[in-house]
Length: 68
Image (cartoon, rainbow, N blue to C red):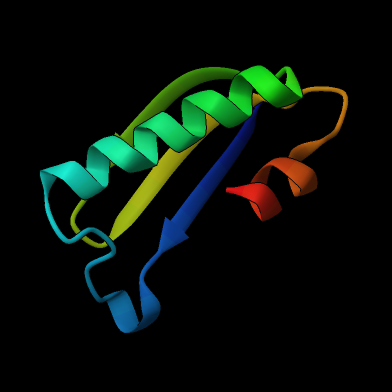
């Protein structure tokens, strides 16, 4: 079973400063995916929110999200 998570800015405010900030976020997601055995199926970065679709690893979704 896959998990879908949405991360939204407070009061729908932007969550990324610029393209480098977006790249850093994707890098962190990739690093955590490897460390936790999480399989990322799809992702979408929007101005004020992010969607992640993944199979969580043995550590579970909560550990992945807390570290992210």
